[in-house]
Length: 105
Length: 119
Image 1 (tube, rainbow over the protein chains, first blue to last red):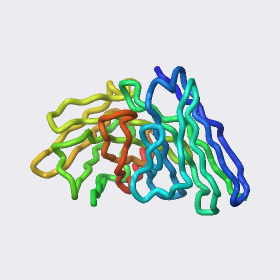
Image 2: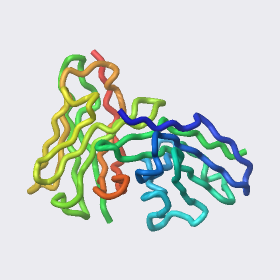
Image 3: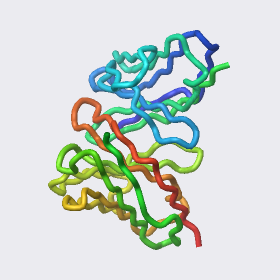
């Protein structure tokens, strides 16, 4: 079965750029999307089709996908961006990465 | 605005059947795929499967032998049944709308419902 691997944690200072990676075999040949989940809340889609932002998602969220790695980038990270982030792809089933806890400190 | 609401028992005994319903408003169930996802306490997301309004399904192979999903078009509802549950099935269960293009993003989620498996 297809697997996606994320780092368990990433730390970033306020105002800096955070990058969260998601690795999978030939992931660049598929589309990736990303979810943000804050404690006690449901996940929210922040990036789909590798680079697209749903309505209402701030421009500081961006995505890329090439080779074996998809990356979620948060520019000018704010305290409110502290959350768990999950990547997801489609391989005839929905596949999630294990999640990355983003700490803003 | 699309809204999804899960409902069902919060406590299920081991070996019994977990049954949940997801009521959709603001969108017709006769479009898109509709998925169930679960999240054990403190852990990551696990996709359970999806159902289309025609009744066609696609289940996570790891749960396929225990899962049944149904669609109730007239009520704009989907349902989930998971048989022979164990404490490992304790999780927050979410329903979500799955867009069947590209990465199949889950673009609208319910608030989730915690189901505890315990005697």
